Length: 158
Ligand SMILES: CC(C)(COP(=O)(O)OP(=O)(O)OC[C@H]1O[C@@H](n2cnc3c(N)ncnc32)[C@H](O)[C@@H]1OP(=O)(O)O)[C@@H](O)C(=O)NCCC(=O)NCCS
Image (cartoon, rainbow, N blue to C red):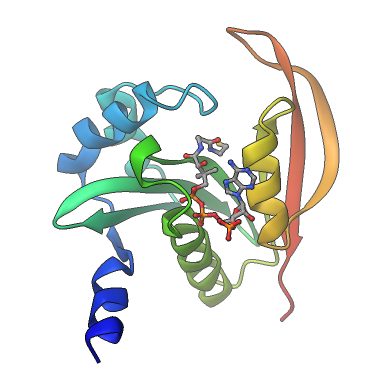
């Protein structure tokens, strides 16, 4: 029983990302050079785009991870996803990605895709673990530093 309670406490709590979380998101991004950096204002702006989906993972009422995606008809793109370095490898990223896929299924999405830096072995392994497969490569997609992107996708059955 004690063990079960302990596990439950560690389970990430996923909720909708709110505009007031933008500062925490920008702070996580500052510590995540593998992700695309967005300042607070950009985070708030993206959240009001049509089809946007923003999710936060919380530990003890503190935002430790987030995912921002956008749906365009029957496709959705994960635009940004990061977990604070000290909270990685505890299932936060996986919980965020699963919650996004569940929501997109409900919205009738057939394909979820994303771009990831070619050198981001952890990111590529993470998406691979969640059944995303490599669908292409975009040369010189990123700046600072210039680098190719690997496009990864998952096809959702009806
Ligand atoms: C990618 C990222 C979001 C994963 O978050 P996380 O909370 O650590 O992920 P999880 O704990 O849910 O990991 C699930 C699985 O993904 C894989 N994985 C995650 N990090 C990995 C790493 N550093 N190396 C290899 N595999 C990794 C593993 O299979 C892991 O399962 P395991 O821990 O049982 O081995 C996180 O590493 C991160 O924020 N990175 C910086 C930003 C980034 O790269 N974002 C993605 C591109 S935009």
